[in-house]
Length: 209
Image (cartoon, rainbow, N blue to C red; front, side, top):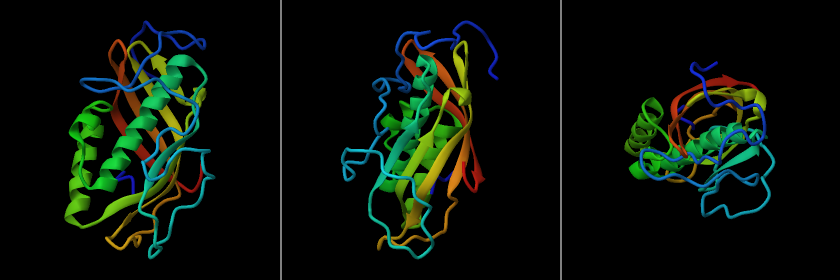
């Protein structure tokens, strides 16, 4: 499974074009600006319409060996949208590491620092040691009301993650009955001109959101 109001001043998020286009990136290079289509997709998934949200699998279910993270909704305001996309891309890198059983350190460093970065690395190793990996889909809904940008920091509050991921064994059998949904709270910091990083992240399990 997922392993699972800012201070300062300066930049505001009062309109759709309040700041130049930003990428998310990490300690080195950055990713592209957000789009309104599927947030990201494992190569086995391909491209196309966002699939309908479905419930989390049950323990014992045999699951397809693939993963994908999708954006059901992103904010309309420009900076808030980029912050939302940063969180979506972080979750894709995170889920990809849990799928592979190892973290691509360069990819992880492009999207996170601190605790969110170490969680990618640590839980991927734990899964590999248990001979498990994570598969399935995750859908994120983030709107303008969820994002508060102040200066070089942004807070994401109560963003919705619909979860259909599970940890499976080598035969693809789910080893758990995970939660259907989470509320995500994150701190996203502006590390450089076009680079925003996830610096803190918390999950709250809920029945739905």
